[in-house]
Image 1 (cartoon, helix red, strand yellow):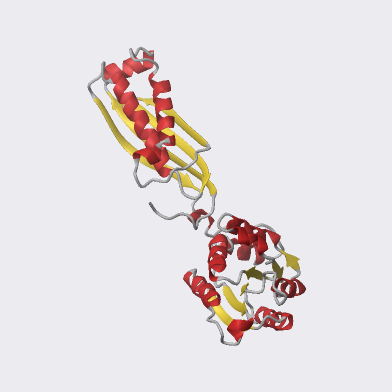
Image 2: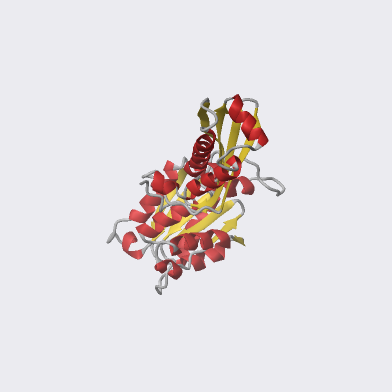
Length: 306
């Protein structure tokens, strides 16, 4: 199976369709509702829904997904039956296979119920016609985003430890197509962080990510220094990072990290540990990009994707 533990839950929707070509005798029986085995459409609908809920038992590499909604509908056309399924789930991965399975099993059930009276039956055209909710739906990255990274750590500043967290952030930003205009390592001192934040704001950074100094240590001043600089708090970002962390480690509750806006610059505190940074980056990217589109709107208002 593919590891999806780094993903976030979103509303996933998929619609799939299939077609069952039926000969004249079968079509007549369907229109008149005279099929010996019973109500073809209702039985096929139930079969499709049941199959969707058990897709992971049929397909060996498919994840076991909790479904919040599944429908199977039928449309009689000139030479057969069009089947459409819609599946919804709030989960880490999509529901394409569940929708396709619902259509497939509904088609097979229809075939089984009609075959005593019709030999000319053919199943085909099974495909996804629409899907929503994946990461690509939230990829709203404006052009020319500039970022800076600040590592706040006495031990790294003194050369006693390697800065794995800061380097991880830099690499991730570059991987996301963001220009990194600065990377600095500073001691756990409030004044030093204030100066660096102001420096990168003046240099035109759209995004400043700090790592370290967000815990309970007596020299953890990053949130306090950040709060002295920002003009507007963006609690939702830091709350979501902690929420993402809660599902992976209870130590996430010990983070005091904050986030906020100065002019058109967004500042986000990240944890100091490499694992915490990795989780935080997975939580905010690529979704955070939409913030810069909003920040760049002249006169306020809501952003629209390109």
